[in-house]
Image (cartoon, rainbow, N blue to C red):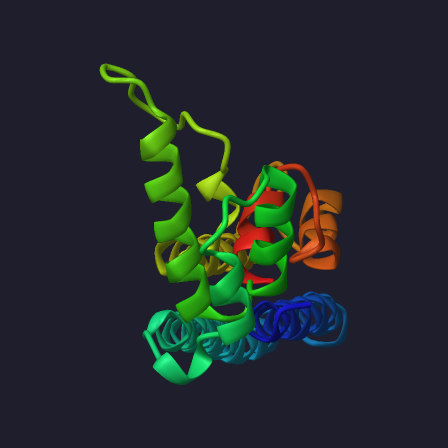
Length: 204
């Protein structure tokens, strides 16, 4: 799993456990103490949970910000990262399969991805008839990761994690740590599914 998404998942797990402990302690306070003492005890537990919640949201935001910084570093052009062997191949007309294999090889190299995007655009433009618009041509530029896609992915995952944290301390259907939906959200956060596949592809 991506480092920054794993960090968010760890925070989610930790807060989920803290919220479950909070519920247990609130129940124990009601059983052990008289109502006025129990109310004081619950007030302290509420304050602790609120502090834990703020810390969790801060930690998720920090993981998102670090992911975005990494995405920007990935996208910064660097001549030392140019692969001379593959640059020679780009002088030829590559088939879609050959192009796709080269993209796959250089997904972690922002400089080569920039060059491959330019190559696809140039070749597709040559193959586009006058008056045609959109993604025509043989080469698919959508398979090339971009800084914008990476930033969007980290932002979306952070929003999802923070929403789950909010729902853990909420009341009503599908909320609270006892909810199967919350348990599933925590357990499956960052795991591939049809809804997040494109996001994970952008940051793999």
